[in-house]
Image 1: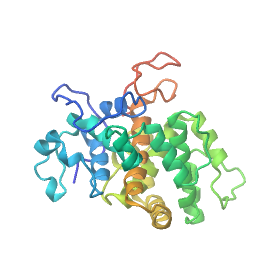
Image 2 (image 1 turned 180 degrees about the vertical axis):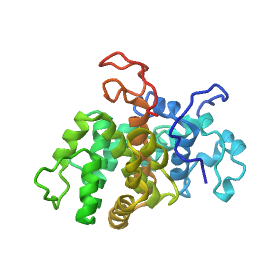
Image 3 (image 1 turned 45 degrees about the vertical axis):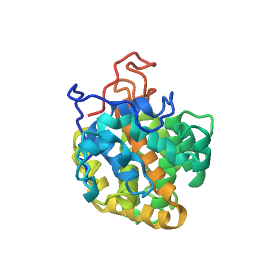
Length: 301
């Protein structure tokens, strides 16, 4: 059990981040600075993902052991910000082949390779040279596409409405209109955050923990109270059920059962912590100011 993802994270100086105990590949600007920005509650979901695998090494980290004395009972209530670098190292390691990692001094691979690996494994059509947030988005759309196939027309109509896809004809398309959703994402910055939240919610609830709630805070404070149904009502159930049915056949292997939810959650964190709220462009995790409009970068609340 861990804290829920925070809807209103507050940056404080009441903790000291420890240097990584596990071998950490640096620089890895797509992952390490992002996790250093995240709240303990948001990092806690990654802790839950990692601890689903018996080969995890996070439990060997002294700071983790000290702050999580009830970890043997699957209760992780320490301040996860302290060992954020070790969480990053574990994600890197899960993508790297064990034998290959040994030749790299125990270090895994850069996060972008983990994203490529997940995209390839799920059959995503993407540009390998694209920015990490673009590829993460294509992964989320692939998951959404598979879940959409199992929905009723009413569920599909509500989903498309929440994602800002207009439908003047009133005819519900049998296949997910990916191009229309991509257009909506480009025009409406908050839609990308909603997309990352609802897909991460479905994946984490299926593979990691069925009580994690992404939407309770975000839906009410960011989008609109009615969007809560995306997570808690029939739409949320349909997304989770559709993903669950697909993942039973398509994931395979314990590493992917860690890596896929980790990538989904990191995508959500990137939208939350790296999106400029003036122009709604996603910025590099190392940026403090928007490279497009110059505004300061603050977590979306």
